[in-house]
Image (cartoon, rainbow, N blue to C red; front, side, top):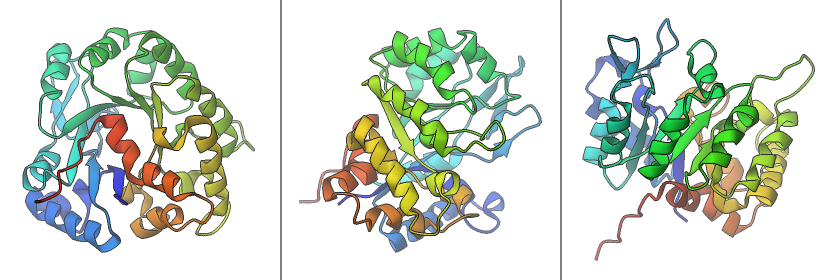
Length: 294
């Protein structure tokens, strides 16, 4: 069974990661992947937010838009093209956004874009007002999948775009849940609204941070596996991709535990595990599997 982690900010793995050559960090990552049995990993390069909630790394343009850069991901793809691919971000306020989407689609290993519409960034309001319509249209025209994280408003904001762009592959980030509100509610209670979006055949679900956000139990988190089984009923295992996001989730659990609660579960079939842990990310992103050596 091929195992692929569908999200890793692993540019920040290890001590003093921000002071060493990206190639050194890449080698650390490969050692860690080999230790737990990962065949490949999909990179989201991330070094934090600036004071205007712009996702770094990147270059701020004169109009205030941020143009993302990915020196670590590019190094990883260059050194290990059979083990890494990555996503990027394109700000619709960038004057060159349309040409960037077309260009990125042709870059080796760059397989998707991501929208993180967090409060204070301006992106959530832009999405709500239809300001991403042409942007999503360009992604559909260029066959560029899009990951979407829209805290607090995922179904309400995303559904109009799902309806308008039926050929665009859109992956809902982090189980589609958000900060629990009002007081007393839980993120698990929000899954019903997320599951309703499974009616759109072009939408996928990234099963990431589930132990942190959805569990009230100890490892191996049987309640999370129960939620995953419910997700499989509506999306099908072929539209659910596992991700650990280890540099973030390490505050809650190890990279190995983030994998093995699914890998070793007796509540999931072998076929379901094969899809969720590897085949789905290949299919959703059209990430070609390396040909076996002769």
